[in-house]
Length: 232
Image (tube, rainbow, N blue to C red):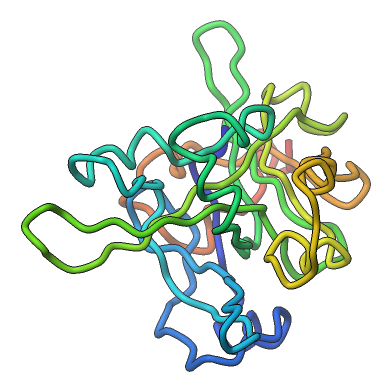
């Protein structure tokens, strides 16, 4: 799964990289994003034929959900069941997005110990997670809530020793099809959901400060130091 990630690039730079055209949201650098918080997403508007960068609630809430708490169970969508899982199949068909990320965290379990790892791009400014988004409104006619989920799949060779799942990261060449800018069949879309090349990312252990959502600072991605001040 993917339960924490970071986004440290300036919003203007993210908008440039994804060629979004709407006014960018006011969004600070974040180093410990957690479920139910607003996360940046890139969506395609077929009416304007432009991409938009917005902040959506992390944890997808289907239109038929009774309340927002449903989203806590839907922070990730398994690539293997996107087309059939009731919570995600409509969004997979019509509401796909990209979720920019400067990296993510995963925990390696050894006995009763869990060691957090930071996984960052190697030689690239950010990752583009495959995502889904939805609209939800309560029965009382309140405000519309837009929410999202990160698509996950099998790990690559780098992540396999750490965890059995990882976010699906899409190459720039796949963005058009995933966003719906270019026509693609269900089979073609599912074929995009492959493990990201391990040589294009790096992973290293970090301090357990990342375990607490109260901590949100650049130091969270510093390599864990062993005795003598050498990185583990």
